[in-house]
Length: 177
Image (cartoon, rainbow, N blue to C red):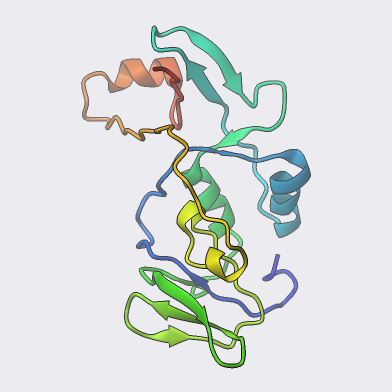
């Protein structure tokens, strides 16, 4: 949206450009995420994600006949990057810390040892452990007791064709105890 409004910006991304995103799928709600993607000019239909139980029974599919659809992080990354010009994302440039200087302006200390400042707006979009949170709230992230494992089955695995036939490509969720 900043690009469409002609507002200067930079995205600092700790991962290399070809690094797959980490984490589970995201719920993109119609009244927030979907509208934002549409306004940014990059809304695409999300993949439907099947949910299976631990016995191999398909329970339901997110996004089938209802909102909000689940979207795979890799698909979302490609969707967002499709409208950002080259050079706006500084790959392999993680933020180690964020603090305020004597004038109250935010200073980012980057993993490469440099500092960046002069921002009118800083958005921390790196999840629960964001380096920005302490600048806006005293609340801290806490472990919920739930664990999510992300696994990949490669095409070289002998079971890949069977799993692809069952689940398709992309994310698959299997809740259990």
